[in-house]
Length: 158
Image 1 (cartoon, helix red, strand yellow):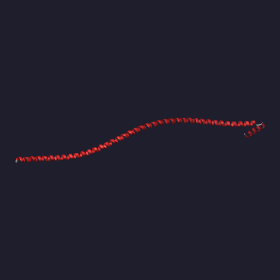
Image 2: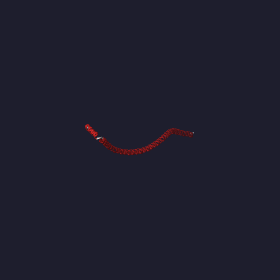
Image 3: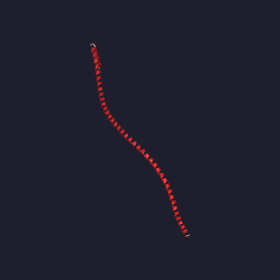
Image 4: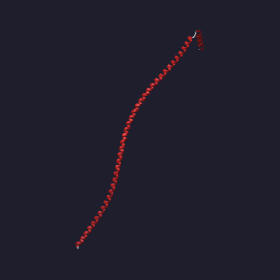
């Protein structure tokens, strides 16, 4: 019977060892479950981050396309502005030239107006002289007695 007792003692030791091992396995299993749950949560978070990253990358691509479009538009506007500035300079030069021409024309017009005034004065003097000559001719064609009467009336009126 001694052999049976040692088997039972050895079995009790093995049973205690097995109980300890079982407890450790349960703890490991609980840790595994917690790790698996944490892993699932981490994977869900990673997936959410990847989706956010994908959206962010799409937004970056979209914004970059907008930036490229705005750069092209800016360059086109710069070219248009440069062309408009050249046109404004050209128009400014034309305006300056036209103003200079206008000043010249104004001076010529002023000189022409003075000349016209002189010619009108000469014409008026010529008309008066012509009228006097006609009157003198009419008087000269009169008979001598009438002519003397007309000359005397003119002297009295003067």
